[in-house]
Image (tube, rainbow, N blue to C red; front, side, top):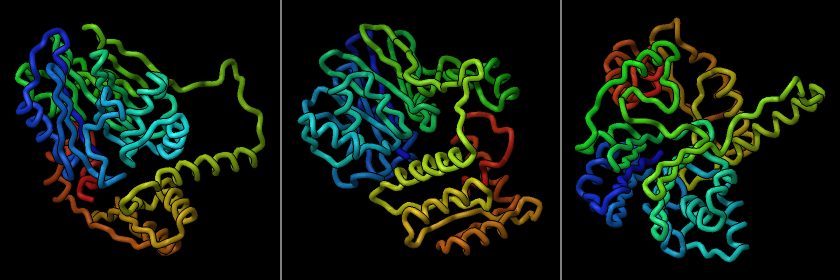
Length: 351
């Protein structure tokens, strides 16, 4: 997890304040305690706080492509960056880092906006084209990585969390009653709305581009459904083998990191399956973590222990009490930036 933020005064030549951008980054410093960096170019400013996962030595942000024309700030991980890097090198691109961040900005420089469909990952990023004076924002297909923006009176402000945007003096926080109704109806606001008036999220599977004073939002992906009952006709065995292949590949490609990788083990079917797949792919000692509850009605520690013993993992568990849940609930709300209708995120916060 990292954090990104930025300001673009796209209808004026008003320079972006480095101090203001620093304040925005400080508001989300918990997302990236390893490094902090900013890029200023007249009426444009980009900032990043980094949690180092890939290329610890040379993956600092903001980062430019080889030409120096494109600047990027990026939160997330591109799982197929090695394959994309090989493809770019064959086309003559010379990398200066080993990071997946440079793969994104180099891909945009070479292939343009269509490069997004090549990405396999979870991401939220902003790319500045200095020559064209264009800003591009994009978010992964299902919205794993957050990305919010405010656009009013020629000022465009964005951040990984709303609290970064609220650091700008032009932004006055005001609750949207309509969004609050959505929360109590659907447990969430409906994209692109947030709880705050005039602050929106970049819709999952979409990109946003600011060009010549106009803001353009377009989808690059949507979930496909069979039309008129035109389903694939395959056997149960073939479906089972294909599902195993897809899940194995999804887990394998997520194990690419320059730091240790661990797994959350709840004792349920999903987490036990992914942990078993990790063990099959990399059968070394695997670190797993879980939560047990003092209230036995919610406790599943017996299943967690059974799975960890069977898979021979190095297992650690924390015990969560009702008092800890109530004590940490305000912090959970502060991080979520939305009304919470249940306390389930609080034990995860403790872990």
